[in-house]
Length: 478
Image 1: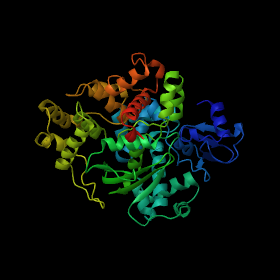
Image 2: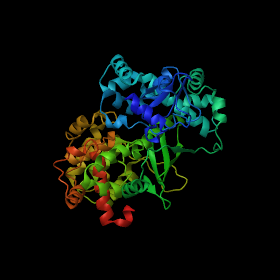
Image 3: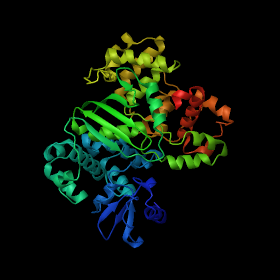
């Protein structure tokens, strides 16, 4: 990080950098987001850190004015492929809380000692401290959005004891859990949690609604008449139903969880699904440098790269959809979900199944699937081998693409598409995609010479998709 650039952002109260770094003020002992409304400290009294956990580890407490933990996440973890960034994606998903640093290190191929050294050198805090920061944020959400007792909040957020929880809240917010709770208003009395998720601007809600509705599988997902996206979701401790209200300014998520310990994982996966942490301003500025792309960017400003909350579901749905229409893929998917997915209760009656597990598809997929026998056999074989595959958000993109192409029935396009969405890779150009090629030809773009658009070629892919859809199906693209 460059001190002068960070300080200029702090002086300007620039919201674009919220979550990308934090200001630790030496004289007050607090840390803030860059857009904090208070008068900026003098340069000699401030330093900048990449994560809130780094500030907390150094003894700083969160600012009460700007609530620095309630910001969009850093786009750094997707734009970089280093070990620290890949580890952060898994920490945000709660892997350390569920399996400890040993499991995190094993997934990434390091010893716990090596990983701790890498994370501390790169970010100023080790995996345990970073996971503790995530737990503290989850605890604040539970305190301020539920009527759970303080003890229940402590264990639901992943703390090992109430004393540890109290100390963490006091260290981070300089108050007790009860005092932190008293700052919230209108806490719900139902078993649903409604959260407003911070979004980095610019943000196009219409593109995400179009993308999600176009792929929605009956019984598993729906986009209702008000444009709200609902779906069932399998989380580490049980099933959930989520509802997402999208607008260009805010994202409201309503969660019905089987186990409140899944709150952090649910929020992390929703953010990845909607690509809420992307630095679209930087991507669009870079793409506008090519004059031919300026009209394309203007027509599609704020378009995100839809991610994935479950790489297994994404892989299977992509394989089902190969060489058939989107409508046919939804039909095949709905048949598979209804026949094999576990049932779930929904007050509205529209959602009734979870997506089937790899074991369920491996055992019965051939009995309920239709289509070419070769594709069905490939799907069942991938399902039977999936638990032994390392397909998760912490993978290196290029290694994941290579591994996916080793699977039966998975070609280059499928591997790149699944890896792009699974890890949120910002620089994948799907140059073999027919819609992308058609749109590029119409605009006079040579996809063989794409280096000038790095490292934002995934967003160019989305823009080309959007522009072709806008031309051929204007009502759906609106």
